Picture (cartoon, helix red, strand yellow):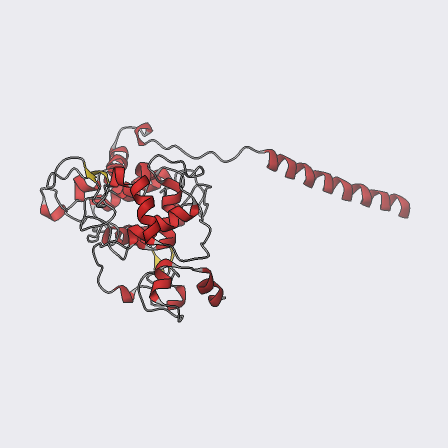
Length: 320
């Protein structure tokens, strides 16, 4: 009896091991998750489809609907002629280009900039006030409802809290030196000026005042994001540039080297741009403040220039 019982236990144990290894093998052999390609045109005709399509237009043609040059003054919520897809490429559907796919299920979430839990509507308005250098949309208004409907549509079928591969931008290895705007100027001239122009003012589709926005957006000057925007932080902008620029680059097949991306981002962010008032109120819990936030106060004793250009490893190590 004891021998039989022992054999049974050994058999059960081996079976469990076999099943576990088999499951692992099947999981390892499973195909990679495919990046979604949601198309609002596939929705059935009706109010929902119309609202989702309007939300898509608000992302792709922000300047024409709520920009500073639209005829109806009360609709001028954006303070510049960028579009949301200047950062969220292909109307928020491109991998590694700050896509909006899956974002709906990530909110509400804690935001260090305000040191509180924020809704998706509040996050959208943060972009309008910073990246678009404008003012907040009415939370219950037609435009906010359309943006929410579009982002929800893009996130259909993605479980709450899931971050698909391709979300955000790939992390960029830190430099062991400060990023160099002078080197970045040469990188910009060779790779960026043909689209964004030598003066960084971009290429308009039409003429000033026609509410038609840009073919290639300005990167500095009066008609771009202000100094409180996330893209004005060096780590954020260098990672985005490395994954997506020059225009048309695939996020997992960059053209620029790591160093070139850091240096050109430093060059761009060293140029003049609109100022956001009261930046010192951002990150009231200073321990939550990103190391590349280019404005005081800080919890550490590193100089402003190091927070602006790096190197960041010493700052990060000090926070441990």
